[in-house]
Every structure is written in structure tokens, then in C-alpha cells.
Amino acid sequence: MENRIRELRKAAGLRQEDLARLLGVTRQTIHAIENNKYDPTLGLAMRLARLLGAPVEEIFHLPE
Image (cartoon, rainbow, N blue to C red; front, side):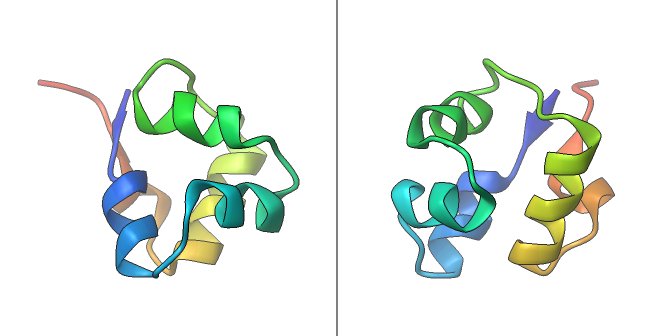
């Protein structure tokens, strides 16, 4: 699954460390999600969407 986490995080002025702290995960988790190496749980995806101010379906998408 591909995502726009990096783009939205930077637009919000957040570092990976900041986002990780706000979500209660490690910076490595954020790094893995941003690099499409880890698909977050539904709960984490929803918390990311809320925090970044975008619907889940605008953040995550399946490659064509």
C-alpha cells in the first residue's frame, strides 16, 4: 500500500520524531510506513488521518 504520510507530515511542519511521539509509536515505525515497508493497523491509520487532517482514503491507496 502506498501513502502520502511524508508529504502531509512535512506540510504540517512535523518531523518523524514529532509524529511518532504524538501517535505513541517509534520513529522507526513512521520511517517504515513512509517508505511503504510497513502497513499500519487500522487504528493507527485512523489516528494518522485525524492528526494529519485528511481522510484515510486520501492518505493510503493501492498501487494500480
